Structures are given as structure tokens and as C-alpha cells.
Length: 105
Image (cartoon, rainbow, N blue to C red):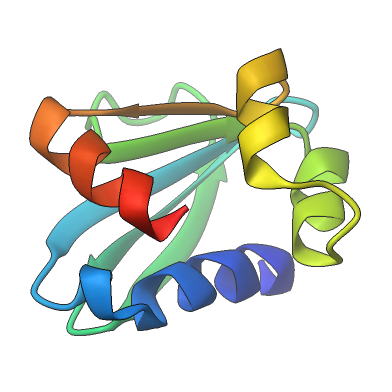
């Protein structure tokens, strides 16, 4: 949770994220867990973990990665762009959100 709060908190603090109010999820493939929360008012709020497949609710912005890749991203050992391009990290969102996230990532 700390690693996810760190990476999402950095993203939420950027000026381009101001005014966004979107639901978020991060599926951690090796832990069979989904962490859900909300990006709003320049911060990430209400993070909670739940078993994968428990809720049919689909977040506006969805990340998928292993917990090792999440930790590597937060420690600066892995860059988002190359990780996304190689498929280690997946990002799904609507077109408008993707265009906005492009400037954040």
C-alpha cells in the first residue's frame, strides 16, 4: 500500500492532475489483489485492498502489474514508459483520461 500511495501520490500532485476526479484500481497479479481508490483534489484517497474478482466495479483508470514491478517503480529502478511499452505494466483508461495521463507519466 505504501508503494502504491507513493507512486499515485506523485502522479496526483502534478499540476496536470488538478481537477481530476477519477476512480483508480491497481491489480497486483502475483498477489491476486486489487487496490482501489480515488484520485481527487490533488491526492489519492480511500485506498483499500480486496481480493481480485470480488467486485465487478470497473475503475476509470486501471493499472495492472506485479508487486515487484510496483516496488521497482517507486524505488526508481523501473521507469513507467519502458515498463508500459514492454507490457510489464498495463494501463487502461478512457481516451480523454489517457491523453491527460500521458502528460502525467
